Length: 190
Image 1: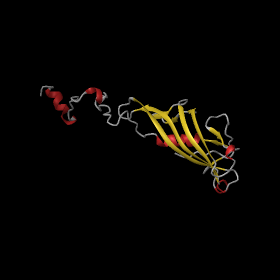
Image 2: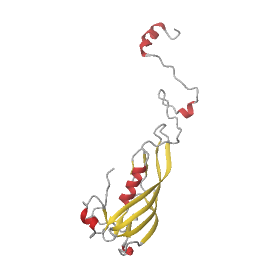
Image 3: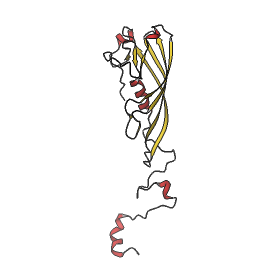
Image 4: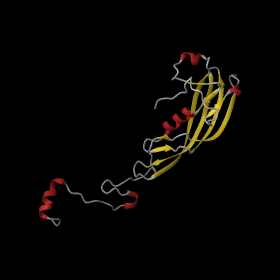
């Protein structure tokens, strides 16, 4: 997944709960602030098979630390992910907690001057937009093939029934297609 750092020209909306004002850090390296917030997911995060639905709560436990080049964001994001089991297609739900980390460069820093606009996130008027960082961390941690449980037996390939409900003696009589014509002439008793 391509990284989506904040553009130097885009101004984050201070009313957005995922935007944090860092001006109280006063550009003093070592100064740190902690933030705990529960915010609604701004839009669906993930894919159809597994995702965090839009509006669902995302719990943020973040630390912002002033460093020489900008503000370093670290911490965790937690959310409930929903989807469908890749084996039996039953609905699934699980709690996901991911680590987040990102440097937001000061406008006049060496990092800002020596990197392309899309290589590193930027502070804009003292504001950091954590949405791209949180979104990327969640999407990268989503399972490629979600399961309702580790030992899910899946579906029967013949009839499509759920193997967990069909029982251990469930089977289908299959005939080698090369013998089908003969079986058709002789009947089912032969």
